[in-house]
Amino acid sequence: MTAASSKENLNIQKLVVFVGLALFVMKIAAWYITNSVAILTDALESTVNVVASFIGLYSLYLSAKPRDVEHPYGHGKIEFISAGIEGALIAVAGFVIIYEAINNLRHPHEIGSLDYGILLVAGAAAINFMVGYLAIKRGKKNNSLALIASGKHLQSDTYTTLGIIAGLILLKFTGWTWVDSVVALIFAFVIIFTGIKIVRSSIAGIMDEVDTELLDKVVASLNDHRQENWVDIHNLRIIKYGSVLHLDFHLTVPWFLNVHEAHSEIDKIDKLVKEEFGESVEMFVHTDGCLDFSCQICAKANCPMRKMVFVKKMEWTVANIASNNKHKLETP
Image 1 (tube, rainbow, N blue to C red):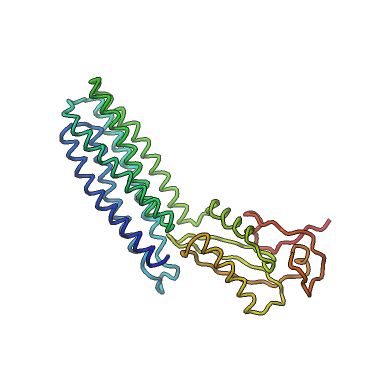
Image 2: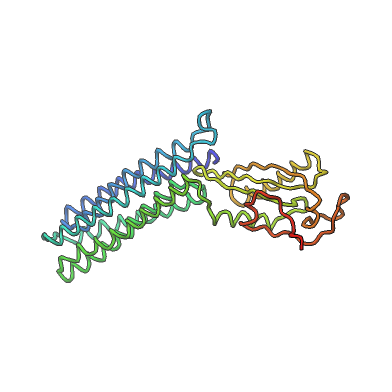
């Protein structure tokens, strides 16, 4: 990840922290005015937002630190841990909301002035969504799971707040006090689901689970921009360290290329990958010389060392490019 990307991530997360604190105060004020359990649960979720945003800020600070002897691949994995904690906190907030809503159904209390309360939480929802959208957009651009998690957290809070506003409007015009608790229950399950999804993504990152979507894009790009000296690619792997992608594979080139010529082919792939996926990609390539059976899948024109007739180009797929064996045509 570039220094500019790291700085941008930190600045966005600082904004998330500031917004979280400001909106928490707004929602507490709205709860004080209305005495609504739905608004109270929204405020409780905002306490999670505040804690989670500080965790996210610290994780981005660590992930931006340069590599050292103890962390040769950098500190990016902390972003997965941060996202996992944030997802767990979101889910816990959902269960707290369920408890409060059920308690209010059993022991309903009088609702106060709804007009100002609705205006306050509506303003909070608008601000939450805009900042969440910005965090997700920058997080995707810079491959930052922590920033994406913060953005999704803010947007899930927005959806909860919108549901609460709808419920409060219904309550205002009907006087049905049970609506307050029912709305809180519905959106409690929504944010629990969001939290579980974030935890699942963080575990996948820690366990180096294959990002199938990303792998599909890499393979498609290599196929589309294939050069004649790229006889074969195999043993391809992608590992995420926070916002940094580590890509390694074996590249088969004509055996008669010298070291400089083979390295030139690697440089072409490196340029292609960084143009497609950004500067935060680190690539390690091992070159292999082609063998006689490679001629059948090698489309190099006027090859002076060809031993067998070219039959067809091997189409690279996610399945065959991940294999540790050089590709060759099956003999009948």
